[in-house]
Length: 464
Image (cartoon, rainbow, N blue to C red; front, side, top):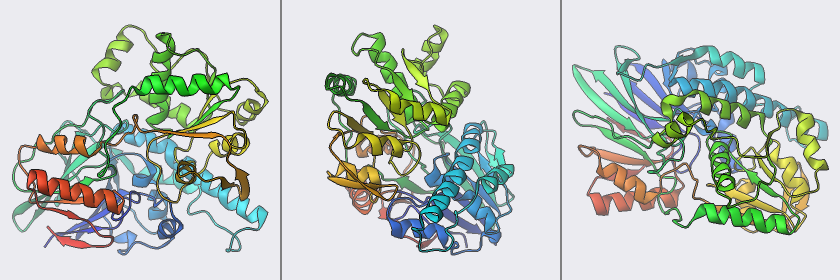
């Protein structure tokens, strides 16, 4: 009897982990970090409900840390199997995981230095070296055909939009002479992707069960002219003598912002204000977006054929070195700072926020979902004071939010995507969403499509 257990991304957006078991063999799909509220982050320190050593293999949908960031700890806990992913996802993980280990070491060292941790000493979840070692387990999959993980499991990847290398997974399970199928949506991208191919529809023969993300299950993305609004935010801030600080995900969001700023400046819709990309990770990821042309959409192909550099707007500075980052503090004229992380949970952007939030001339612009419990969500919610590096920082800067560049499909896009499937699943489970989003999308699928839909619960096990 084959089973599936929701080890994460159930009741919350983060921590994607799904265990599939058949004939005594265990496969994990995604291996992400829990992020946001403390009660969720503490789950990262608890061993998996099933021993890591009992998992035979791991398959990944994409590289974001809420889908991959637990991998070094997973190996530390005893996992010794192969990790399968697309070539672009493997390349991105070679950047993201060591950076995650480095940041966790930095956080632990800072807490020890300040004596602010309840633990003596504070320890990282995993180290930079442990993250580097984990990369030896990665294997790039040939996407042109089904890939046999073992005699029991095989997978097939389908384009998912969202970010470079992201894919949905069709898992086939062979047991007792029969075949069972599970489709993992991963994070579903937008219908109109700026840079990469939009989500595809899988070819599925026979019955199947689906896991569907629900991040925006209760919301629609705005349909206003976001380019005009982005230009207006920059221009009005510059007119006050201020700067725009954009906490941006290193993968996907930074590249889209550079693409749009180039469009605006080239079209004369925005003055060429200096743009500083202050994130070594984002700079490296931009190089990978240039490299992996197999994911580029038609418009990107046309631009590159004309010799246009999509991610190089006039006046852009790529600040890789720490000295370059610190030098930004000496600039007292308007500029745009794009810096990780996207939810302001760590990285260089915290230093810029700490400096710029008290000044009413400045603007902080959030582009995308801010999970509960994050600094980004606190600022979005109107906090008059926030804590950064354990210090209280007054909030006088303007806080703006846009979700036009979100990498997640809204509920309308998901419903239209599902309607293109050649046959409906036996059951569809809502995952990777806050309770309100998951429940809302479940209700919409049930009412509009007449599919049998349920909301997954943390640690729930279902029979396939």
